Amino acid sequence: MKARRTTHRETSPTKESLLKAAERLFAEHGYDEVGMRALADEAGVNLGAATYHFGSKENLYIETIMRCFRPISEERIRLLRQAERETNGKPIPLETIIDCMVRPALMAVLKNPYFPALFARNLFIPPPFLTEVMAKAGRPVHEPFITALSRTLPNLPKETILIREMFSRGVLLMFLSRIPMQKSPEFYECVLKEMVAFIAAGLRADSTISDADLPSMALSRPAPAI
Image 1 (cartoon, rainbow, N blue to C red):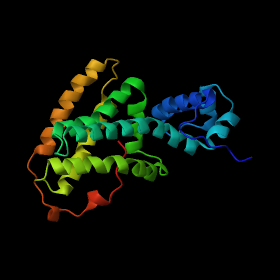
Image 2: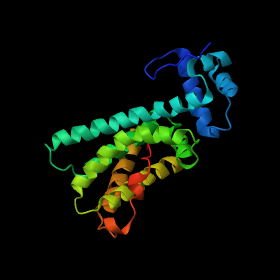
Image 3: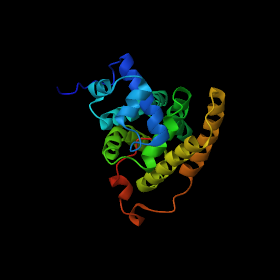
Image 4: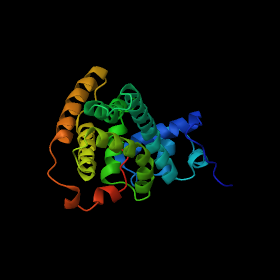
């Protein structure tokens, strides 16, 4: 019998247990080192239930990643659209754009302590099947932020903005992957202020290049999800 596929909006105790187990095991050991039987055992369900809900380890892995990524993406866009309304069509202040971009990922740690390790693994050593999945998911979020940054920083070539935006995500990821997780929202608010100021200074600096100086490599590469 063909395995049943579930959508991300469906919930069941078995599916929820599998996803929680997958978040922990994949974050700690990576995709290749975790089998479906180990995932089922960790979740306290039988192997047939895991196959019934997800069909394969690959499908389970994708859904595990997207379950973390979707709320962050949705919150980023929500905050950016809110900022657009508040500025009445004018360019959004740079620090506000950065806050909209960084805050959802930073605060996600309070709800999901395995999120940083999971995303770090998928940035540096992603399973081959995940690259295009994440790029496709990231583009609708990535492009509005590049547009907003371009309006706010009209003196910078688009290639410079694309490169510096990648640097900005690197700052966020490095912090999340290196700093021991805290339970205090106040801690992350303090970190957020410093991170926004640091990224803003880099984005605002005079460009050292022109559009003609670089090939359009940044424009042609898939947009990372984080």
